[in-house]
Image (cartoon, rainbow, N blue to C red):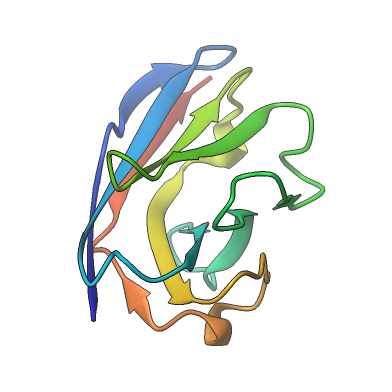
Amino acid sequence: QLWLAESGGGLVQAGGSLRLSCVVSGRTGSSYGVAWFRQASGKERVFVAAVSWSGTNSNYADSVKGRFTISRDNAENAAYLRMNNLKPEDTAVYYCAATYGFGTGSNEYEYDYWGQGTQVTVSS
């Protein structure tokens, strides 16, 4: 069982940056992959980025490639999403998700544990 808690969301102007954090607790001694998803108002939740247990493999949605960077610190049981050059269309609730194993899947059904989400709002 894993519990996830996101933080770091907020209001930022277009072109600005934010770093989201995801603190993981519970049975963290086993390998698990972490991903970020987002859900804009009135839309479905979509994949943003994922990172493997080792941190050496990552996977990004085309819409954020070159602007967002996912990372993790297993010693701190935390994962991060650095978001640069933010655009109004990045406005959404961002969710951290995790699943045991070594993958970097982009399908939300691959992830068993979810945080409550943190709001990111980008003004134009």
